[in-house]
Image 1: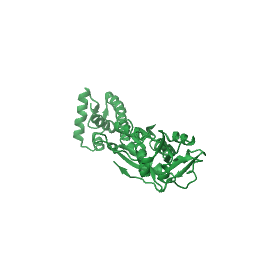
Image 2: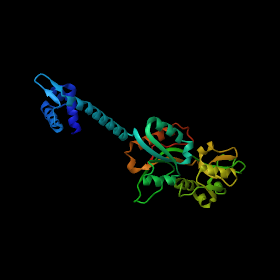
Image 3: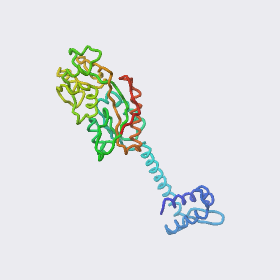
Image 4: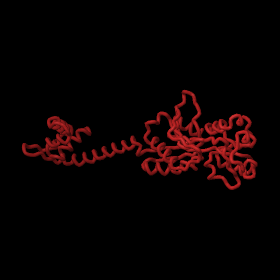
Length: 314
């Protein structure tokens, strides 16, 4: 018994007229009669009583009509649910994020995504950029919010693509009593004289490379006091007088009165990017999350001299 046969049967059962049923099905009457006859032979008894004046259902036909309606309604419901998965309206998404996204795009993107995709189960994982790159490549997360560009990898690794969603200035955080604390801005040469709370490149490759790029020759002479993973830990060391730390300007929301935030000369910036596997381009749920990221970034007051949107890098 095929679904097509059940649909043919239901059209005749509802209309009790082969001609009208054929019109409803956009087919001619003879093939419809043939298909109904095949169904009757398959079930082993007549489903309709036919005369020259009327068509009516047999008791078996009435029973099949009731069962077939439930079956076809369920099939239509499943088909609609599957379309929702294809369209990104239902399913699940696992997203990684760097801790600094907590103070910029993350709260709004979560609100937007859950409002727009309320039947998608969203799982959020706090991870460093390096951890997210690894998990994107092994497929354990679908999308990542990372800090600065994806590092180059070998050709055997799955290719990642990125889109810039938010850009902000880099700043130097130092104890309030430090000689540089009252400056309007500091140069790379001046930063090189400060013991720095830095970050391991294995976990934060894009941000570490960006800081070294911004400091130029000064990076070679950096004095590393401590290496930490989270900016909250870095600020704790700064407050304790261990050294300074270069961070995104959104860190102003975290600093206590004992810490001064001084912009770097030339207003260099750092970027938050949405990262995903290149093969995820046709994933509607991931695309919806990235769209929410852009909208969340657009709702923020600019924290730096410029913000870029829609930039894509592979």
